[in-house]
Length: 192
Image (cartoon, rainbow, N blue to C red):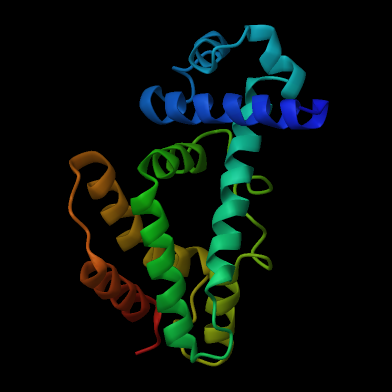
């Protein structure tokens, strides 16, 4: 095994251990000693890959965020009508949250924590495909003429609520519920 492969493997091992602990115990309830123990490594090894725990938290969030963004783009049909594009993206995002409840819990913890700043909490608006679709819909008069944060709250509210129900209470969320939720999210943001 080459050194780069070994380094990537250990980094991923640390990230996976941290992900599980952060989702279970919270960001502050997961010291680096617990992460190291969970990963089966020495505490010092963490600092070979991450400057400190805060860097580890940020990098984990950004790695997950980038992977989710790429997955959304993989099935994206840029030629579809705006309402369909929005619903497809929102439905796929909800599916990802449901398939990955540990990742969802961590991402939500991060997003609403002091670690998340305007500059580091998410992809810039001009890179996030859902934000691009919302801005395009606003420009065409299809979405409510409200600030993006209001549209974000209207769009994400149903997704986050159902993902929490699935994550915490194991609510069975099937394809029909996902489709209904995506349509309801569009109804919430569309111009009436």
